[in-house]
Picture: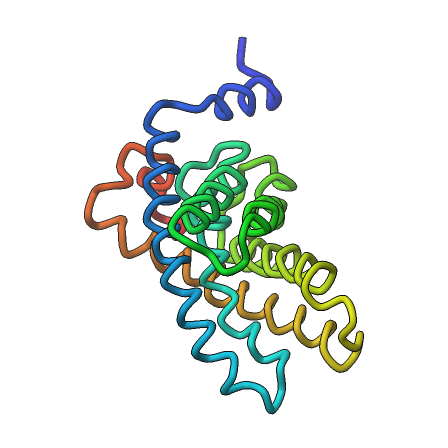
Length: 202
């Protein structure tokens, strides 16, 4: 008897040891990148004082694990787990934002995973990646404007800041993650994942 859609989805959602290890490796690598990127942001931010919302233009790099992990692992929770763990690594290395990066990592992971969850983890094209990056940016900056910038103007700072972060997320985390997957495919490191067996969709 053929498996139903729900049965197939349940089987495909089971995590393998390989999936956990892969997400953990991605998280460690990007946790170090996050830590280094914090210094880049600190250097860029004063240069953008003429229009402070532009500081969100570099936001996308902090969002890559939230999109890259679901594209590779294709399991429920991959984006949340990897993004949150990467944030934890950056906190351990030393983050000027303290423990709040953990909350933000969870929100960004949820945002990045939403379009894949909406498609029941069956659609992994450019559109899903772009939407995932944009939603990760939206989730992350909504925390920012609530926690860090509550007194700044809605239309003069908050709305453009969130919008620029969403654009950055769509381009850097969304399209950037698709480009990273495409670059990894010829190396064979993804051959044990569905993405490695379905190259026509890349």
